[in-house]
Amino acid sequence: MALSLAAVPRGEALRGHLAMLSVSALVAGSFSFGSLIANDIDPVALTALRFLLAGVLIGVAAALGPGLRRHQFRAPWRFVLLGAIFALYFVLMFEGLKTAAPVPTAAVFTLTPMLSALFGWLLLRQRVTPRILAALALGGAGALWVIFRGDPGAFLRFEPGRGEAIFFIGCVAHAAYTPLVRKLNRGEPALVFTFGMMLAALAVLTLYGAPALVATDWGALPPLVWAVLAYLALCASAMTFVLLQYAALRLPAARVMAYTYLTPSWVILWEIALGHGAPRALVLGGVALSVLALAMLLKDG
Image 1: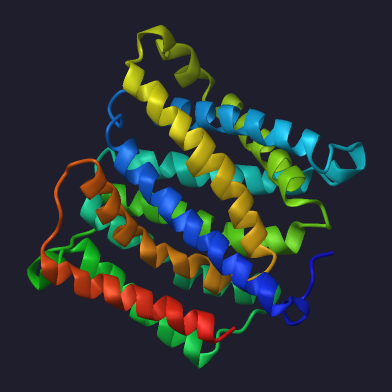
Image 2: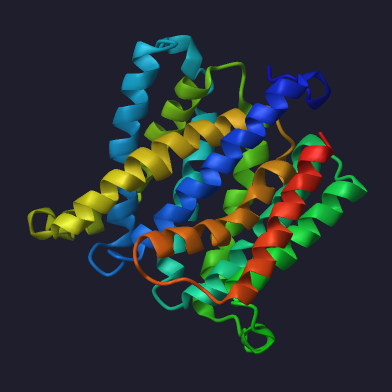
């Protein structure tokens, strides 16, 4: 069974925070790179191939590391549940982006930490202290500041539509995943547990997305698609899944998902690196709020 939060050494908790810092940067890269190929491949086909490639990487790493044993996959329904939830998030993210603009979609994504705190209480009875609640609120304000480029008018014009509603369902799934990892893990190593989840997710996607997989002209996909898929599979999937699993076993769900607030700030850095320009200096105020929120979380242990 996973250690209780009280039993996690401070050093382990700090490593959990470092893992989530890395996750936020890698996930932000998937937004910037993913936007380059959004119209070149079906969302289900993209997600299935992403899980396939990442699953191979994780499987090899698990076999060479802790090893794969049959008893580690007992109660396979756990992996099916977690795999279906995570697959649902990725598919609905791309499905929502078909009709939703990036700005309101990103605003919906900032609801994930609060949702995760709720699921953490429902599933694990993890309590949110006043300090964590204040940090979540501060981080949310900073993220919205970044997302709307410091323009109050842009925030007031936010009108949720069908795409935002679809993505919100995905965000609910994403928020539930983190506390479920802690609840359902039975002592399996992070690599093994992640591999089981990814195999299950791939099976679900293959069954659901068979028509899209068959209809995709894989040979005609431009080279950029394959390059971005390599990043999504290695960095934004394989590495982040393991890091998320690692952090979820050492930190409360609310703190794990609080790093979501850093994603818009990392996106800005990725966009600058890709030559897409820098935002106005006013936006940096939102970045400062996000960093302050994380400092509050770290101080709280």
